[in-house]
Image: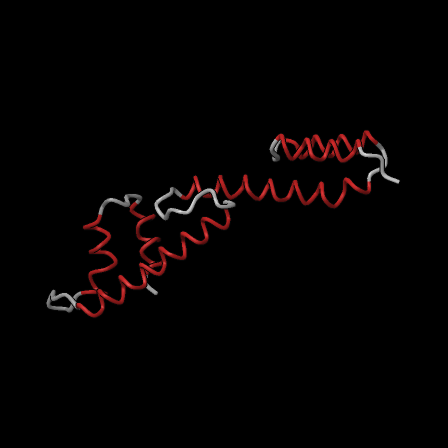
Amino acid sequence: MNLIKLVVVGMEVNVLNNYEKIYNDFWKEIVETTKGRLKRDQVKRELSDYAELIQRVCIIYDSITGGTLSKPSYDTSVVLAYANDYMNKVFASLILEDLLPQMQDPTDYQTLLDYCREDLSSEEVEKWEQQREVPQD
């Protein structure tokens, strides 16, 4: 698939809206003959590949952001920020799920809960605080 090179070209010129330069630098030799005629079949193939790529990007964005983002037009920095937030939340939940039940010392329990607090919703933190209050025999 030729789309990976397109992303690199777009990043090199640092202007995604410069469609003439992108076309001339990347697409022209792919979709035109040496005489400048459009290769319709090749254009169809490239557009098909591009449509499939867009669909895959939407699925990936949705998955790595916990269902928050799914449009392909989001800036990569926004997607990465949401993905990092989502991963931190997942990791914090896993840490609490695995370690808190084993802790006997209330100070250690609270320290770990405080450590994970910034990545969790208040409802999730409250759930863990209430679980600690329940006597365990």
